[in-house]
Length: 78
Image 1 (tube, rainbow, N blue to C red):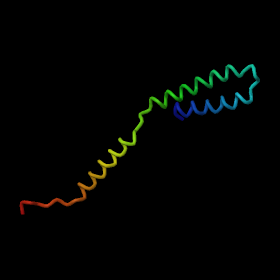
Image 2 (image 1 turned 120 degrees about the vertical axis):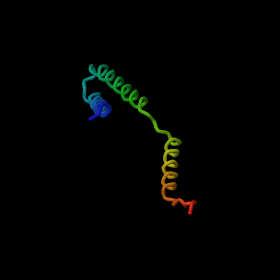
Image 3 (image 1 turned 90 degrees about the vertical axis):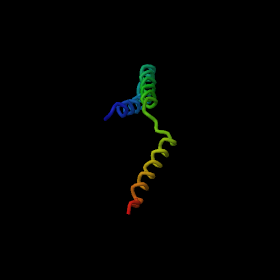
Image 4 (image 1 turned 180 degrees about the vertical axis):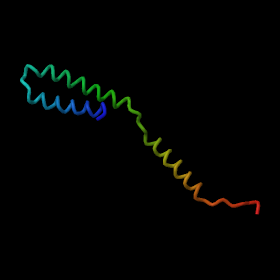
């Protein structure tokens, strides 16, 4: 289980705790919940995002490479 998965599990557990805990515990749990959400958001924003344009460029380059390899070259020296 990686760090992000652990944070998500903690978030889910804190959500359940807010419903099940006595009212005097709610501020502490809510604070932990907010901090956990912030940690998850920070991990998401730090992860490299591959844009649609980058993905299309990569696929086009792969297609061109396959086409180039599949076209037989003529020997002009014959």
